[in-house]
Length: 354
Image (cartoon, rainbow, N blue to C red):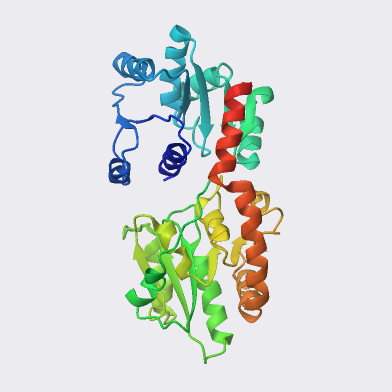
């Protein structure tokens, strides 16, 4: 999704961006529809001479001098190419997993991390993790937040999710975007929701919508969440959409965006919700405190505490006009910090100075 946002921004700014991927993703057709420069180049082994040569040909034909990798093994191949050509190579770290696959990958990763132009992290929280865990050279470690483009809403589709689930326009909708996984805590959201509706004013319905991929395996977090909702009689007003393309386009259906997680490195959906101008409730892990400016852009609650989460949501519900004014200010600040224009400006500065 971020690659698509970046391609669109560079296209509008009349700058040249060539994106290379090792396989087609779910958004491949969006690149085709918009005529963005996307090449599929398969890498068949850890260090692939054919892959390296094809990247070289792309760089040569497009007069490219900078290669920006977003995965470690692609960066390794780019680094080998840079030895032969003098190209600058940058690597952005999006998660905690870059050196964890096996010992060989860890050794290679640490080797190139000290030799490429710069290591770029999507949050200061993630940067600190790598510096403390792997003792990376601090002089070439940088933070560059992901960039987001505000959505221009199609007002004719404003209540599409409400219509899908037969939710009235007057009802209050809580929503979360994120695939079901061990990293996220959808169950906590359900527990908080259960607390809220037991005490809520019954003259106004409150619904909860989860947007995100799920499975029904034995260890599925979705199965646990569904069972909880079934036991507590919540299924009539708790809705599961499954995976949806361009899910961020549906955030405007929510009156309050709620989020519970055990670990994140940036979390696009939370920032997208802030930029949408709706109240956001999220737990107080370090990266969320960092991105929300210590809670100035969102309502923070104590991690893994359903009562605290419910308290935060209820505070918003009871003071919605005031909260919407606060959310408008949060939106303006988030755009200032996390817009794609800000990202590109900072990215070009990095390219020039490293």
